[in-house]
Length: 173
Image 1 (cartoon, helix red, strand yellow):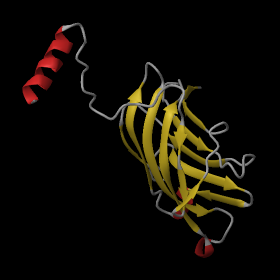
Image 2 (cartoon, one colour):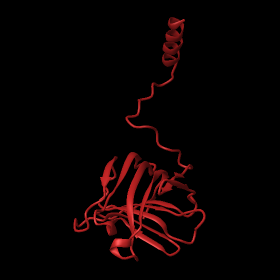
Image 3 (tube, helix red, strand yellow):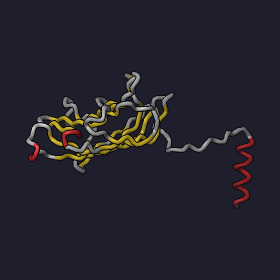
Image 4 (cartoon, helix red, strand yellow):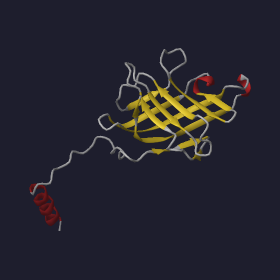
């Protein structure tokens, strides 16, 4: 039976079907499908894909910007992650210390809660870009960050962990 499968595979390929090159990373999403997930302190939060954005600036120092707006709070900013000097390649982009000269951090605003990754002392976070197609402007990846309340006193700041995934068409600013 294996010989027949091999015969049909070989016959089909020699009949004009092209052998596709195996991608080095998992396939990118289709151009019309955006998927954004957010967990806030381990709890899933619905993300409004109509108001949320994946953007890359076109300046000399490109910036990857993720803005995830909560479905239950569309008028608030939600979660914003910035990766400054984004080289338009896959890879791991760790957040930077406050005095690094680069902007790699996260902020979260909902109602009266405002929190920043750089308010925690250690700017702890990472964005992993798993796949990127610069021709079709498609991107896929994951993120994780720890944020601390900005308004509270240093000893009484609440800490929040945000994590999730993103994939879809990114916009050029």
